[in-house]
Length: 549
Image 1 (spheres, rainbow, N blue to C red):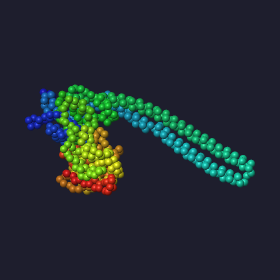
Image 2 (image 1 turned 90 degrees about the vertical axis):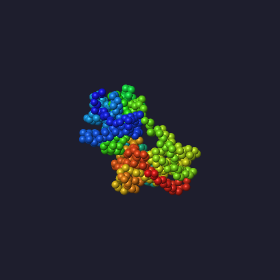
Image 3 (image 1 turned 180 degrees about the horizontal axis):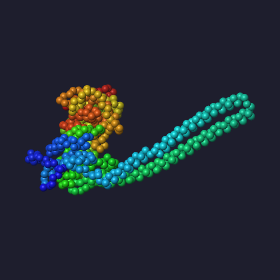
Image 4 (image 1 turned 180 degrees about the vertical axis):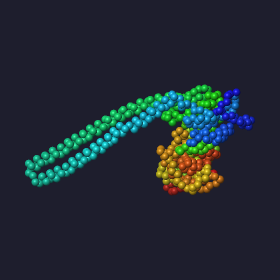
């Protein structure tokens, strides 16, 4: 019998009524196995009971993971994990893959941090800044001085012309010739002075430009040296992060991601729950059976996370790692390769020679995906083989149902596209929200940006996000849910879903939103109204399609 392991929690269940999983969980899109659900319930109960002990971990909200395993004695239980680098003193959770207290790693990380700090300082070099200001100042002074001198020459020229006119009326031919000669000498002298002045200013400018070139060369050489050293240290840093699989083979983060650029976004992938859980299981000769992750605590400022809600493994951070760690382990089929539109019909509510209006079902792609070709585009292309141009004018998320307009000619496409760009197309959506919205109407202005570390999720980002605006109106409230009408002024990715779910928006996720809320049979979001100008007749046309929820 194996010695007691505080990180292994035994699961009580009846194998006759609750069989073990036949395959391991497909990590990026899954329904938890009943044993994983049981493990989740036990861990969440533990978190509730240990809330005071775990205050340093839970105050900001964290992702937790459970891995159902079979140990060497054949006993079924689960391992627990909390995401992030910061270790917890409780033995309940598996340790980090990387020991951040290792002196060698700390030394490498400190050198990396120092080099980055040096690069930041070089990017804001005070000498370069001063020389640039000096160059701008000298060029400005030069321009003012030369303009002033040329203005004096112009005024002197006018004055000489007046003097010549007066002299022609009053002087003898001999006197006039001598006077004109003196006027010419004045003009020549002024031109020589201007030329000299230009030369002096060009000399001053060239002197500062030379200083600037030299300083740029010095700074760039230092930057290149920093980047070279930083690249070597980053490689060494990534090589310290190694991952084990069931065959006992280890691969470093550098090896797994060496073809990816840049490397920076994935440096902390080892702190994700799935790699940590699998690493511990393989080190202790445990067989992985099922996996699940959930969020516990308040949501981060930018992201949308729901307390106790289940989430898939972050594919952007973990795909290459889990490809290695799960080598030889059969997983459930990927739902992402199954065509959700199979057997569904496209409801065409209007068609003529130049455009088509379609009522798209939910879980139906607007355009072909990476693995699924069936889409509104391919169906319409097949139905209208003589259509020209790109067909697609705008899109709906795969999970969103409702009205889409397609153009059958290039000219019609350009005309309708222009209306979307100029935001003259009227469209609104209906959505069913989890929870009761207190107010009756309003406007949401939350800028959005893609979450580069967890695609396709979107973030609310006031620093780098793109402007996104939605007007909303409550239609009714029933049984703890709210039906709303949404009027998007902009068309950002997942705009309506994020504006509804985010705490600075309506703080109520759309029913069935598997990215920002709680997964159900479908996303309850429908594009119900579309109003635009016909590309040929130039008449205003409006279309309506009621939601089926």
